[in-house]
Amino acid sequence: MPMNRLAIAAIAAGCGGVSACLYLALLLSSPGAMILVYLTQLPLFLAGLWFGSVAAAIAGFSGVVVLLAASDLLGAAIFTALNAVPVVVLVRQALLARREADGTLRWYPPGRLTVWVTALGILGIGAAILLLGGPEGLQATLREVIARALDQLTERSLPDRDRVAHTLASVIPGIAAASWMVMAVINGALAQGLLARFHVAWRPSPDLAALSLPRWLTAALGVAALATLFGGGWRFLGINLIIALSVPFCLGGLAVLHAAVRRLPHPGMALIAFYTLAGMFGWPLLAAMVLGLFEAWLGLRRRLAPHGVQIDG
Image (cartoon, rainbow, N blue to C red; front, side, top):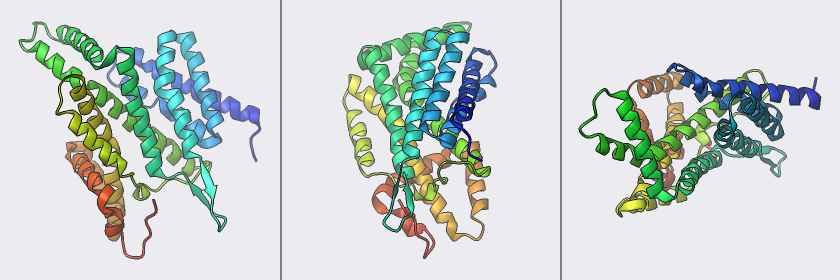
Protein backbone atom coordinates (compact mmCIF):
# COMPACT_ATOMS: atom_id res chain seq x y z
CA MET A 1 0.00 0.00 0.00
CA PRO A 2 1.52 3.38 -1.02
CA MET A 3 2.55 5.70 1.80
CA ASN A 4 1.05 9.16 2.14
CA ARG A 5 3.21 12.25 1.98
CA LEU A 6 3.23 12.78 5.74
CA ALA A 7 4.57 9.27 6.37
CA ILE A 8 7.24 9.73 3.69
CA ALA A 9 8.28 13.06 5.20
CA ALA A 10 8.43 11.53 8.68
CA ILE A 11 10.63 8.65 7.49
CA ALA A 12 12.88 11.06 5.59
CA ALA A 13 13.20 13.30 8.66
CA GLY A 14 14.07 10.27 10.76
CA CYS A 15 16.76 9.30 8.26
CA GLY A 16 18.17 12.81 8.54
CA GLY A 17 18.25 12.54 12.32
CA VAL A 18 20.13 9.24 12.13
CA SER A 19 22.57 10.79 9.67
CA ALA A 20 23.23 13.69 12.05
CA CYS A 21 23.86 11.26 14.93
CA LEU A 22 26.38 9.36 12.81
CA TYR A 23 28.08 12.63 11.93
CA LEU A 24 28.27 13.58 15.62
CA ALA A 25 30.44 10.51 16.18
CA LEU A 26 33.25 12.93 15.25
CA LEU A 27 33.00 14.18 18.82
CA LEU A 28 33.99 10.76 20.15
CA SER A 29 37.68 10.16 20.74
CA SER A 30 37.55 6.55 19.58
CA PRO A 31 39.15 5.51 16.27
CA GLY A 32 36.21 3.19 15.68
CA ALA A 33 33.90 6.21 15.64
CA MET A 34 35.24 7.11 12.20
CA ILE A 35 33.40 4.11 10.77
CA LEU A 36 30.16 5.72 11.92
CA VAL A 37 31.18 9.04 10.39
CA TYR A 38 31.87 7.35 7.04
CA LEU A 39 28.27 6.09 7.07
CA THR A 40 26.80 9.57 7.52
CA GLN A 41 25.48 9.68 3.96
CA LEU A 42 23.85 6.24 4.10
CA PRO A 43 20.54 7.30 5.73
CA LEU A 44 20.32 10.28 3.33
CA PHE A 45 20.77 8.00 0.33
CA LEU A 46 18.23 5.58 1.78
CA ALA A 47 15.60 8.32 1.97
CA GLY A 48 16.37 9.62 -1.50
CA LEU A 49 16.68 6.33 -3.39
CA TRP A 50 13.51 5.11 -1.65
CA PHE A 51 11.21 8.13 -1.99
CA GLY A 52 12.96 10.57 -4.33
CA SER A 53 15.10 13.70 -4.28
CA VAL A 54 12.55 15.71 -2.25
CA ALA A 55 12.81 13.11 0.51
CA ALA A 56 16.60 13.38 0.33
CA ALA A 57 16.28 17.15 0.77
CA ILE A 58 13.95 16.68 3.76
CA ALA A 59 16.44 14.24 5.29
CA GLY A 60 19.30 16.67 4.76
CA PHE A 61 17.35 19.56 6.27
CA SER A 62 16.38 17.42 9.26
CA GLY A 63 20.03 16.51 9.81
CA VAL A 64 21.02 20.18 9.71
CA VAL A 65 18.36 21.06 12.29
CA VAL A 66 19.59 18.32 14.63
CA LEU A 67 23.17 19.50 14.28
CA LEU A 68 22.21 23.12 14.95
CA ALA A 69 20.59 21.94 18.18
CA ALA A 70 23.34 19.53 19.24
CA SER A 71 26.47 21.15 17.79
CA ASP A 72 27.12 24.56 16.23
CA LEU A 73 26.69 26.49 13.00
CA LEU A 74 30.07 25.40 11.63
CA GLY A 75 29.30 21.71 12.12
CA ALA A 76 25.91 22.12 10.44
CA ALA A 77 27.50 24.01 7.53
CA ILE A 78 30.12 21.31 6.99
CA PHE A 79 27.41 18.62 7.14
CA THR A 80 25.42 20.53 4.54
CA ALA A 81 28.38 20.93 2.19
CA LEU A 82 29.81 17.42 2.51
CA ASN A 83 26.65 15.36 2.89
CA ALA A 84 23.23 16.95 2.50
CA VAL A 85 23.64 18.91 -0.74
CA PRO A 86 25.80 16.34 -2.62
CA VAL A 87 23.40 13.49 -1.77
CA VAL A 88 20.41 15.48 -3.07
CA VAL A 89 22.29 16.20 -6.31
CA LEU A 90 23.39 12.59 -6.79
CA VAL A 91 19.94 11.18 -5.95
CA ARG A 92 18.30 13.55 -8.41
CA GLN A 93 20.64 12.43 -11.18
CA ALA A 94 20.35 8.74 -10.28
CA LEU A 95 16.56 8.86 -10.55
CA LEU A 96 16.50 10.47 -13.99
CA ALA A 97 15.08 8.25 -16.73
CA ARG A 98 13.75 8.54 -20.25
CA ARG A 99 11.32 6.31 -22.09
CA GLU A 100 12.60 4.67 -25.24
CA ALA A 101 10.57 4.16 -28.42
CA ASP A 102 9.74 0.60 -27.38
CA GLY A 103 8.32 1.82 -24.05
CA THR A 104 11.20 0.73 -21.81
CA LEU A 105 12.77 3.09 -19.30
CA ARG A 106 16.44 3.94 -19.73
CA TRP A 107 17.84 5.04 -16.38
CA TYR A 108 20.67 7.51 -15.88
CA PRO A 109 23.84 5.48 -16.61
CA PRO A 110 26.45 4.69 -13.94
CA GLY A 111 29.23 6.31 -15.95
CA ARG A 112 27.53 9.69 -15.84
CA LEU A 113 26.83 9.26 -12.13
CA THR A 114 30.56 8.66 -11.67
CA VAL A 115 31.28 11.90 -13.51
CA TRP A 116 28.94 13.77 -11.14
CA VAL A 117 30.68 12.27 -8.10
CA THR A 118 34.04 13.30 -9.58
CA ALA A 119 32.81 16.81 -10.33
CA LEU A 120 31.56 17.25 -6.76
CA GLY A 121 34.89 16.03 -5.36
CA ILE A 122 36.88 18.42 -7.55
CA LEU A 123 34.44 21.21 -6.69
CA GLY A 124 35.33 20.63 -3.05
CA ILE A 125 39.01 21.19 -3.83
CA GLY A 126 38.12 24.36 -5.71
CA ALA A 127 35.98 25.64 -2.85
CA ALA A 128 38.79 25.08 -0.35
CA ILE A 129 41.22 26.95 -2.59
CA LEU A 130 38.84 29.91 -2.97
CA LEU A 131 38.02 30.09 0.74
CA LEU A 132 41.67 30.04 1.81
CA GLY A 133 43.06 32.55 -0.66
CA GLY A 134 44.31 30.43 -3.54
CA PRO A 135 46.60 27.37 -3.81
CA GLU A 136 49.38 29.02 -1.80
CA GLY A 137 46.99 30.05 0.96
CA LEU A 138 45.52 26.55 1.19
CA GLN A 139 48.99 24.98 1.32
CA ALA A 140 50.14 27.40 4.00
CA THR A 141 47.09 26.73 6.14
CA LEU A 142 47.48 22.97 5.80
CA ARG A 143 51.21 23.14 6.60
CA GLU A 144 50.49 25.05 9.79
CA VAL A 145 47.75 22.64 10.89
CA ILE A 146 49.86 19.57 10.10
CA ALA A 147 52.92 20.98 11.84
CA ARG A 148 50.90 21.57 15.02
CA ALA A 149 49.46 18.06 14.79
CA LEU A 150 52.94 16.56 14.42
CA ASP A 151 54.12 18.48 17.47
CA GLN A 152 51.23 17.09 19.52
CA LEU A 153 51.76 13.52 18.32
CA THR A 154 55.48 13.44 19.09
CA GLU A 155 57.21 14.26 22.37
CA ARG A 156 60.18 15.81 20.61
CA SER A 157 60.22 17.96 17.50
CA LEU A 158 60.83 15.92 14.36
CA PRO A 159 64.08 16.87 12.61
CA ASP A 160 62.30 16.93 9.22
CA ARG A 161 58.99 18.25 10.58
CA ASP A 162 58.70 21.08 8.05
CA ARG A 163 59.43 18.81 5.09
CA VAL A 164 56.84 16.25 6.22
CA ALA A 165 54.27 19.00 6.76
CA HIS A 166 55.01 20.45 3.30
CA THR A 167 54.68 17.04 1.62
CA LEU A 168 51.41 16.19 3.33
CA ALA A 169 49.97 19.64 2.66
CA SER A 170 50.68 19.13 -1.04
CA VAL A 171 48.47 16.05 -1.33
CA ILE A 172 45.84 16.27 1.41
CA PRO A 173 43.20 18.12 -0.67
CA GLY A 174 43.27 15.43 -3.35
CA ILE A 175 43.28 12.63 -0.79
CA ALA A 176 40.34 14.23 1.04
CA ALA A 177 38.40 14.61 -2.23
CA ALA A 178 39.15 11.03 -3.28
CA SER A 179 38.16 9.74 0.16
CA TRP A 180 34.87 11.65 -0.02
CA MET A 181 34.19 10.27 -3.51
CA VAL A 182 34.80 6.69 -2.37
CA MET A 183 32.58 7.30 0.66
CA ALA A 184 29.76 8.62 -1.55
CA VAL A 185 30.00 5.67 -3.94
CA ILE A 186 30.02 3.11 -1.12
CA ASN A 187 27.12 4.70 0.76
CA GLY A 188 25.05 5.07 -2.40
CA ALA A 189 25.71 1.45 -3.36
CA LEU A 190 24.88 0.21 0.15
CA ALA A 191 21.62 2.17 0.21
CA GLN A 192 20.59 0.93 -3.23
CA GLY A 193 21.49 -2.64 -2.30
CA LEU A 194 19.45 -2.54 0.90
CA LEU A 195 16.41 -1.04 -0.84
CA ALA A 196 16.65 -3.49 -3.74
CA ARG A 197 16.86 -6.37 -1.25
CA PHE A 198 13.44 -5.38 0.13
CA HIS A 199 12.05 -4.46 -3.31
CA VAL A 200 11.44 -0.81 -2.43
CA ALA A 201 14.17 0.87 -4.53
CA TRP A 202 12.98 3.66 -6.85
CA ARG A 203 15.18 2.45 -9.74
CA PRO A 204 16.89 -0.81 -10.68
CA SER A 205 20.43 -1.20 -9.37
CA PRO A 206 23.03 -0.02 -11.90
CA ASP A 207 25.29 -2.67 -13.39
CA LEU A 208 28.93 -1.85 -12.63
CA ALA A 209 29.96 -3.68 -15.81
CA ALA A 210 27.98 -1.06 -17.76
CA LEU A 211 30.01 1.85 -16.33
CA SER A 212 31.57 3.77 -19.22
CA LEU A 213 33.71 6.87 -18.69
CA PRO A 214 33.83 9.74 -21.20
CA ARG A 215 37.10 10.15 -23.04
CA TRP A 216 37.46 13.76 -21.93
CA LEU A 217 38.25 12.50 -18.42
CA THR A 218 41.47 11.07 -19.85
CA ALA A 219 42.21 14.46 -21.41
CA ALA A 220 41.56 16.11 -18.02
CA LEU A 221 44.04 13.71 -16.43
CA GLY A 222 46.58 14.63 -19.10
CA VAL A 223 46.10 18.35 -18.42
CA ALA A 224 46.53 17.71 -14.68
CA ALA A 225 49.73 15.77 -15.34
CA LEU A 226 51.00 18.61 -17.55
CA ALA A 227 50.29 21.13 -14.78
CA THR A 228 52.63 19.23 -12.43
CA LEU A 229 55.55 20.18 -14.69
CA PHE A 230 55.12 23.79 -13.62
CA GLY A 231 55.94 25.07 -10.19
CA GLY A 232 53.94 26.70 -7.46
CA GLY A 233 50.16 26.64 -7.52
CA TRP A 234 49.93 24.84 -10.88
CA ARG A 235 51.92 21.89 -9.57
CA PHE A 236 49.76 21.80 -6.44
CA LEU A 237 46.57 21.80 -8.53
CA GLY A 238 47.87 19.13 -10.90
CA ILE A 239 48.92 16.72 -8.15
CA ASN A 240 45.61 16.95 -6.34
CA LEU A 241 43.53 16.65 -9.51
CA ILE A 242 45.43 13.49 -10.44
CA ILE A 243 44.65 12.02 -7.01
CA ALA A 244 40.96 12.91 -7.33
CA LEU A 245 40.71 11.57 -10.89
CA SER A 246 42.16 8.23 -9.80
CA VAL A 247 38.74 7.33 -8.34
CA PRO A 248 36.68 7.34 -11.58
CA PHE A 249 39.43 5.49 -13.44
CA CYS A 250 39.54 2.88 -10.68
CA LEU A 251 35.78 2.41 -11.07
CA GLY A 252 36.28 2.15 -14.82
CA GLY A 253 38.82 -0.62 -14.27
CA LEU A 254 36.45 -2.43 -11.92
CA ALA A 255 33.81 -2.23 -14.65
CA VAL A 256 36.20 -4.05 -16.99
CA LEU A 257 36.82 -6.67 -14.32
CA HIS A 258 33.10 -7.22 -13.69
CA ALA A 259 32.53 -7.63 -17.43
CA ALA A 260 35.49 -9.99 -17.91
CA VAL A 261 34.70 -12.37 -15.02
CA ARG A 262 31.38 -13.19 -16.67
CA ARG A 263 33.40 -15.47 -18.92
CA LEU A 264 34.26 -17.62 -15.89
CA PRO A 265 32.08 -20.47 -14.56
CA HIS A 266 32.05 -18.90 -11.05
CA PRO A 267 32.39 -15.10 -11.48
CA GLY A 268 31.34 -14.41 -7.89
CA MET A 269 34.31 -16.32 -6.49
CA ALA A 270 36.70 -14.41 -8.73
CA LEU A 271 35.29 -11.08 -7.56
CA ILE A 272 35.50 -12.13 -3.90
CA ALA A 273 39.14 -13.09 -4.38
CA PHE A 274 39.93 -9.77 -6.09
CA TYR A 275 38.26 -7.58 -3.48
CA THR A 276 39.86 -9.59 -0.68
CA LEU A 277 43.30 -8.97 -2.18
CA ALA A 278 42.41 -5.31 -2.71
CA GLY A 279 41.39 -4.94 0.93
CA MET A 280 44.56 -6.64 2.16
CA PHE A 281 47.20 -5.11 -0.11
CA GLY A 282 45.67 -2.20 -2.05
CA TRP A 283 47.73 -2.69 -5.22
CA PRO A 284 44.87 -4.44 -7.13
CA LEU A 285 42.99 -1.14 -7.01
CA LEU A 286 46.00 0.60 -8.53
CA ALA A 287 45.98 -2.01 -11.30
CA ALA A 288 42.24 -1.37 -11.77
CA MET A 289 42.95 2.34 -12.13
CA VAL A 290 45.47 1.70 -14.92
CA LEU A 291 42.99 -0.66 -16.55
CA GLY A 292 40.30 2.02 -16.40
CA LEU A 293 42.65 4.50 -18.05
CA PHE A 294 43.05 2.21 -21.05
CA GLU A 295 39.37 1.22 -21.09
CA ALA A 296 38.28 4.75 -22.01
CA TRP A 297 40.08 4.45 -25.36
CA LEU A 298 40.25 0.72 -26.12
CA GLY A 299 36.75 -0.45 -25.17
CA LEU A 300 38.08 -3.32 -23.06
CA ARG A 301 34.69 -4.04 -21.44
CA ARG A 302 33.13 -5.05 -24.74
CA ARG A 303 36.22 -6.98 -25.85
CA LEU A 304 36.45 -9.00 -22.64
CA ALA A 305 32.72 -9.57 -22.07
CA PRO A 306 31.36 -13.04 -22.93
CA HIS A 307 30.27 -13.54 -26.50
CA GLY A 308 26.62 -12.70 -26.98
CA VAL A 309 26.41 -10.61 -23.80
CA GLN A 310 25.59 -6.94 -24.47
CA ILE A 311 27.38 -4.45 -22.22
CA ASP A 312 25.51 -1.16 -22.38
CA GLY A 313 26.88 2.22 -21.45
